[in-house]
Image (tube, rainbow, N blue to C red; front, top):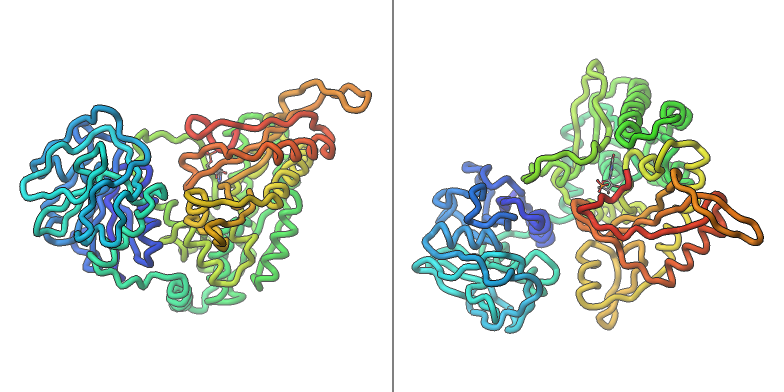
Length: 535
Ligand code: XMP
């Protein structure tokens, strides 16, 4: 299969470049800057990403361009462009002021294949502290903005381009056109990476790989494991056994609702209610890491006990997706929280791993789900942490606290689903780019608040009490914090700017209906420095 290689220099938008290339129905791989595969005959082009470093930083990443030049078409983005200009004899200097935000391309060489179809004045997004002040010999400028003379360049007579702006972000209004020009016209992609094609080839491949073997899969209710399960069951039917563990800290009614959805999808599912064990083992535990460790350990225990009952199982299937595996350049190298998914299975079971979604981004997984005819509410479901509401209750966990939080969370989430907003311009394009199915009428789309945000939930501040008054009674109860964030990958997130009338309604509903809560706050912290979950 043809592929574009994206060499990662550590930018936060590298994965976004990958997703944009995939949206052009073209397969791509993101590799660390120093892991270019010299002998892969399927490579049709190379993109060099941005970086948090300046080309002058002693620790700046570099690549030997002689391995790429004149072998493949190359596109450098931001640092990628500056790195090539700097290395090949041009000059890169600190910009007089940081070049950041929206700018317009005032001059564009629209005869250049990279800018075919571009409009003069096209908006682009810049984000860099250095700028290219002189191009190497034999390079020509092909676009400029009012303040950035060398906004884009090409090496004459060579398939090598650089752009100092970010075509992958949606603020660059013709960024997709630029990437299409590069990937399709210049690199010659046949654009044969599509959802229908993926389902057909993956089901055939799974049949071949799994033969008559039995497979076990842990379902979480989330989109990744659900899509993996449906895909595998298409290939081998009832020889797939899915295990769905209720640790007692799922959302309100989630265990029953999701189990019902799975049964309707024809999956062979075993639902295990292990909540009593989890509550017993968590009793009195208040430390967040300790809670996570106990839940992770108990989960493995319960899952393994169930898995052992599946006679003759040869494979463990997982909904691992591409971002889980990308060997990203973690500049800080620090682990912030330990995340638990299905842990190690007993060695004596001797299972092999089957990960049919391992090359997909989240939005592609959703597209595959739609292709498989799965219900929309399963596909657009927000991410939910493995340890569930346990990391959204401060202090120790009791079934009563979980019940209170489930009620408040349910009011919040139902409210987000019911509240519709009309969006246009950049806002509409951002939501559509994230794969939300909404029809554009007169330049506007209508979506729910739920579909506009990455993730939301309520947090019970059960270590805090505050005074309130209800009727003639004094109350002394717990606050609930609401959290809703926008994000593309959960690595960074911003708090969602929810409408005041919506917040007012949700707050009243929670305080009036959830006994034990007398105050509602809204969390307005971004990540970093906060994280999405409170624990
Ligand atoms: P943080 O809180 O680190 O969360 O900003 C980032 C994303 O990861 C989810 N999350 C988890 N997912 N097991 C999971 O499967 C976990 O232990 C876990 N902890 C956090 C979180 O909901 C957010 O989407």
